[in-house]
Image 1 (tube, rainbow, N blue to C red):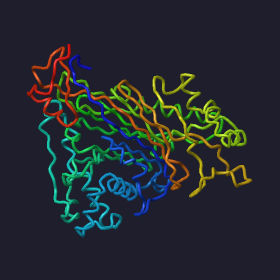
Image 2 (cartoon, rainbow, N blue to C red):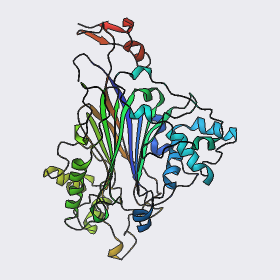
Image 3 (cartoon, rainbow, N blue to C red):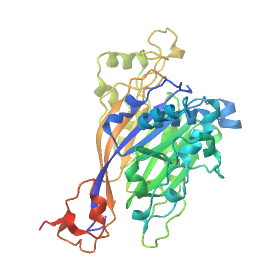
Length: 431
């Protein structure tokens, strides 16, 4: 960090959910899951198994209709006033109409040039071009590119709180990042990289999606992964191998034109990294032993046998990474539309799965403070969603020539831009 840099904290909501191949319906409400009332600055949302992991989806063609439905639901939850207005306009009254899914996706993607470009010297001059919210949504389908980065300076009214920065699907994996409108113009160097670790060691039924970007002067990377499954002895080593290969194999292209600026090309080189997903680590106990501890809510004893904890402590995976304290029940495997774990009402051992904390969120780097780490209670799939709220330090651009050692910024969130201009009125001397 530069010695005279201004620093600001932004709040990032990070959520992960394995939805078990289930497609959402139009009445699904994500507001509770997204904790919209908390008003984070960034929303990072990762899903696993948004499509069934069958041969058709893995080997033939990717079904992107569920991804569009998840985008519609997320936008509806984050930007509810706009979608209520949409209904009054007569367009998109049903976000799940077949003939408008592509239109909705294109509308959210918008023009990705500003985000993908280097913004080292043009941070303050970037603006968002608006479209008429009541215009025919089919007019939004004239984009000339189906580039794999779904990005947006979203063309929505000024009252829209959040805009889609990037989204990417790889078979069943789906990652999207949304930003508060007033933060959007300070995001740049956007890059996406994926790595398959599934069938034959490279297909996309397992693996990760990684998105790299800068917020002001701070580099961030978000990794959404689905690691090797299985609860047999030794399966944890395959998951370790997936992590090692992802950290080694993910690289991002060079996009920065500033020779004095270091934009990271690998995951661990970023200032702030958050890894989320179905990591699939299990509990090293029999089903019967785990159930006894579960009935007594003895999370501490269960976590002592958690594979991710034991593998990290042994130095075999995620060295130097952090995870918040788990104070919630295991998130897998539940019976569909039930609060019962799979096997609780079955005498067949083949159908039993020892409950485990498969769904996790970890982080790497300084300037990261986890504010909460919780799970949701939706019965939509055999996994419960997991989410965390973070305070992330970001280094701001200092353009004020009068700002020197001994001065600190007393600006609030709302007058920060004025403070960063060449107007010293908001800076005071603090010896």
